[in-house]
Length: 279
Image (tube, rainbow, N blue to C red; front, side, top):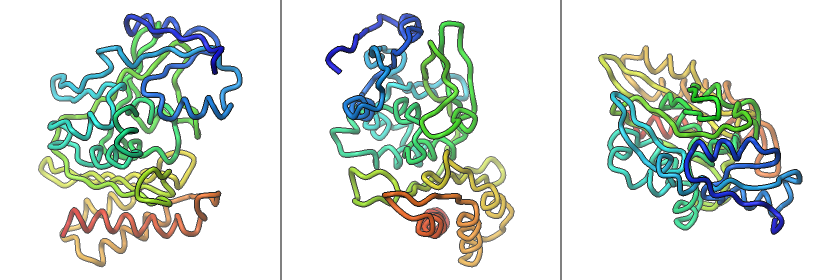
């Protein structure tokens, strides 16, 4: 790690130019990336491009009818922002589960997403809020629905010379919940996590997303449709939705949990989220 080159660009365009160099990666908070580098997971890494001080990436702002969350915004910044609290509680709750206070003060939402872990806590929340990923590169900008951004664990559609500029959310007041299961209450990688967001624009909308149950985050569209068609949200309906979540999950067994447990807990977590939003 001591032999790595370190570039601190003056602006976003200079950062993109630096990222065109073979073996160079972007770093902001570094809470996950630095650990992986020390563990030898990037043997071909030549250098780091520090994007942590680029002001346009560190802001939460409104743009007409949308909210833009800069990729460099820390978890603490998201948790403490009044607009986030009032409009996007699912994302606030997800950010509050990332590590401990020290980690939340440095870990960024862009890094959490770019890491492309199926267990990333903010990713299901962004799915449930129908986020768009804003990508900037040497050849211009582009937008992707977040569900199109991921290819497989650790792999995204970011190309050479590109970085995540931020995330765009429709400015609408939502309600939501986020739950995760880990070995401990804090400092734990999710065995499974569950994000639920709902809003009403004349009719109810429900979005449900699960992490750690497939190579990438999964939406539970059958449960969403069930909830949107239902007149009342009684216990039988919540049980049906929970069963649909179990059927949607496609987990594996690994060192952190078994596929059977994850599949069952998909239903348990969804029902707990729905109870908090409907009772």
